[in-house]
Image (cartoon, rainbow, N blue to C red; front, top):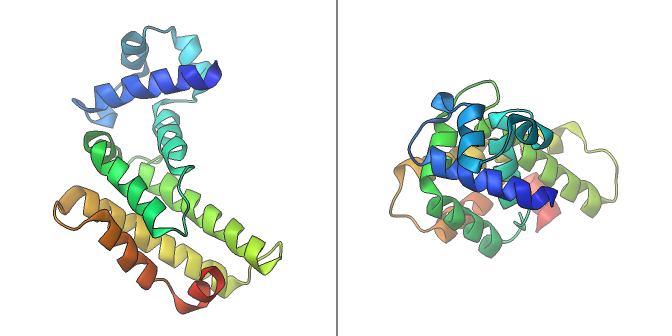
Length: 173
C-alpha cells in the first residue's frame, strides 16, 4: 500500500512539474493534485525534494550500472520524462537532484567494487576515481538531457564507459 501511495504522489508530482519549476511548487499543491491530506504526504516524504529524490531512486534502482543496455534504457526513460528531469536538474537548491544522483551512483559503484574485490573498504585512489567518474557521468547525463536531441542514449553510455578511469575499469570489466 505504501509503495502504491508513493507512486500515486510521484505521478502527480511529475504532472505538476510538467508545467512548473520545482521552486514554485508547494506541498499543499502536491496534496491537492494527489487528493491527499498533508499528513499523508509527510508520512511518505520529508519534503518535495525528498519526493523528487524518491522518484529518481525508484527509477534508477532498476538499472544495472555496468550494462550499456540497462543504463541506456534508463537514460531513454529520463528523456521520456523530459520535463520532470529538466525541471529537477534546473533546481540548484541545497537538495538538488544532481547531488542526490552523484551520491547515489558513488554509493552504487563503491558497493559493487567492494563486492568484486571482496573487501569492506576501498583505497583512496579507487574511491577518488569512482567519485570523479560519477561526477562526470552525472554532469554529462544532465548536459545530454538538457542540450542534446541527437546523440542516442546508447552512444552516450558507451562514451561514458570508455571514459572510465583505467584503475576502476579493471575492477568492473
